[in-house]
Length: 331
Image 1 (spheres, helix red, strand yellow):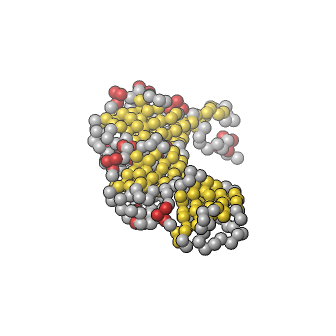
Image 2 (cartoon, rainbow, N blue to C red):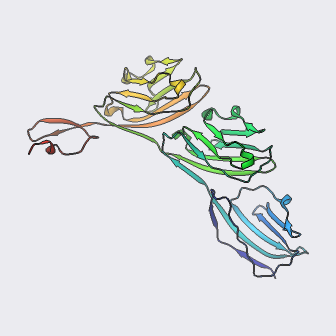
Image 3 (cartoon, rainbow, N blue to C red):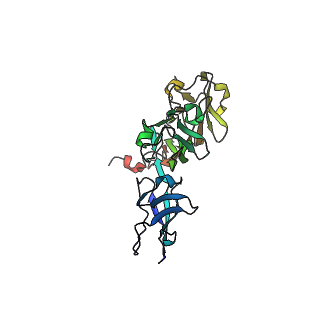
């Protein structure tokens, strides 16, 4: 008797350590039966024959797929055939800006071969982190990720291939993938969401700070530029000092960056005497041997004029205490 069947789609979270592809039958299978799991492209996932697993017959695969379980008799006739559609949900990490680090998780089987190569890439196919020949290979990673990534020790033995990304910014959001190459292959995708940095201040404030913290000890030839509305230059740091002659006249004598900024990695910008006209999207670009970028949305709320009961006009920032002025009167 030949039994067939199709299961509904099975959806699992990629954080799960394991999951079961169900396949049950009501017929009595002979002890010598062969059981074979394959993907829709006929790649072998698992083979059971001669009363034991035949792991040497496995192919490499990437989990999300349609799986078919087929049982054969000694003569090769199909006794049962059933399908399971498996969808592995992409792992999503969401975080606020200004955190020191985020972990992109990937846990797989232990004791991977010593010659295994592990490569993390971003959605633009840039190498984020490379591990091969038993050690990290920082020379192969893109400049955006230099000194910002870390993987666990003994990662091949433990199977913990998670990646730590330091000082994430809006420029880091998007999809990341990790592939394991070699005798044993693995694959994992992670989606990273980073909320945009929002800064609000009211007119009349002495200053406002646009925050940007990254790795310390940046190269001495690093160039740092803060821009607004595309290419309007707000502040330039180059050749070891500020370059006020390169900034737009609207910001002359109104911006300041911290001392030893390359040493500390604190690239925050202080904007003095902010007005409503300063509102906009500010972007810091770090160029040189090491690259970085960050966007800060600044909103400066203007003052509004209100009239109290005596007829006097008083200024009040729209971002400050909304309590009516009538509350100021004595009873």
